[in-house]
Amino acid sequence: METLSWLTAFPALIALEEPARALLEKHSRIVEAPVGTLGYSEGMPCNAYVMRLEGKSRVYKLSASGREILLYRVAAGETCVLTTTCLLGRSDYPASTVVEEPIRDVIVPSHIFHQLMIDSAVFRRFVMENYGALISDLIVLLDEIAFHSIDVRMAKLLLDETGSRLSRTHQQIADELGSAREVVSRQLKRFENKGWVMLGRGYIEVINKEALQKIQL
Image (tube, rainbow, N blue to C red; front, side, top):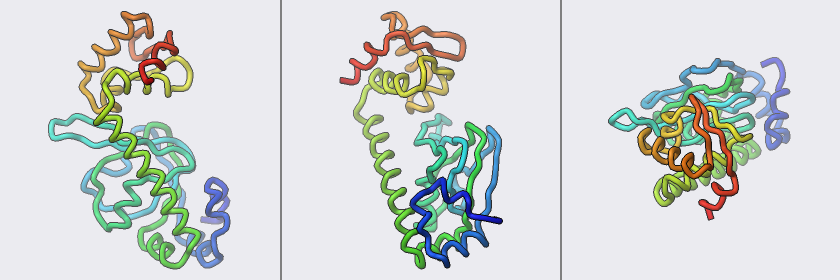
C-alpha cells in the first residue's frame, strides 16, 4: 500500500507503533469484490486477516442436507470472527462467506498477522477486543436459535430492518433464521392475517410495528 490512510476506519489502530505501521504499509493490501463473490468456503485454509472498509458479506454454515444458516454478517469497520479464530488456532474455515454488497477490504497476510500479534500491543488489543465482541454476538445468535420461538425471531428480523420494507424471499429469511422455508411462510402468513405485515413478491411490508414489538416482550 502507498499509505495507511485506511487506518481512520479503525480508530483503535491510529496509535500503532512505528514498526507495526511499517509492516502494514509494506505487506497489507486492499482488495475489492462484487456481489456474489465467495470469500472463503468450508475447509479452506485461512491465509490472511481481513478488515472491512466498505460493503457487507454474510457468513453461513451449510447442513448435511444443504440447508443454510446465517451465522453473522461482516460490515464496514468490522473484522471476521471466524477468520480471527482460524488464524489464532491455525485451522481451516468451518463455514463459508459470500459478498452481499460490493466490498473493499484490507488484507494482512497470516505471517504478518502473527508477527504483529507478538510485536504490537496496540494491534494485539485491537484484534482481541474485536474478537471478544464478535464472540458475544455469536452467543446471542445461538441463544435466539435455541431458546426463542420462530415468531419472536421473525418479529426481531422484521423490526431490525431499516425502513418498513424487507426485500428478501421467504427462503432467504429461512436461511437467516436457521429454519425451513415452509415454516417461515406459515409464520409470515399468520402475521399477514393479523394485519401486521403485507406480503408481496420478493418483499415484506411491515404495517404494525407495535404489534411485532409486543411479541418480543
